[in-house]
Image (cartoon, rainbow, N blue to C red; front, top):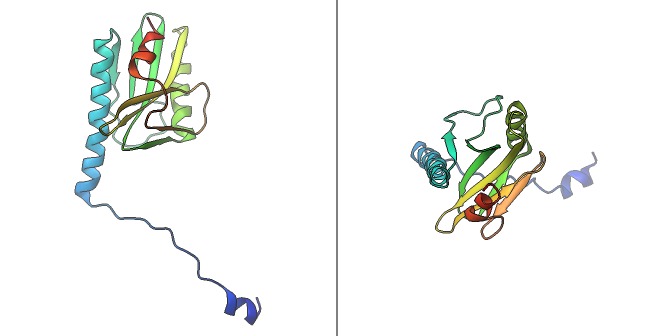
Amino acid sequence: MSLRDLAGAKPKRSRYTRTLTRKEVRRIKKRGYDAERELVQKLREAGFEALRVPVSAPSSEPLPDVFAIKGDAILAFEVKSQERYAYYKRDQVAKLHAFLKIHRYYPRRVAVLAAKFKYKGWAFLIAEKPGDYSLKVKEGLTFSDLISKFK
């Protein structure tokens, strides 16, 4: 590297990250748990057998946040609780598909990405294959649209 390069070198911009307090982390986790429990309740009211899988730490096991069964269909949900935008990483979606592959007894197996947006309600997206997905407010399926596919 020459002196000219050193003199003209701009300092690298560091990425802004905010350190969360213990109280803020607990509040964020509780919001997610509450959304999962609310989804289970909605599914049960719609006639599904639904269950929340309480996994507190990320694991390599293919477990969804919530799964539901009705007739010949099993649905595996990855649930997020956000304000405007929910992002689902490839490995999260791949775990849903791995869970569904284990349950091949059911002819209809569906991986569903669910987002509860603060003050805006729910949005759902069916993930046909593993990959990165995102959901924004007013995008995707409504709860009634999703349920109507399994009557």
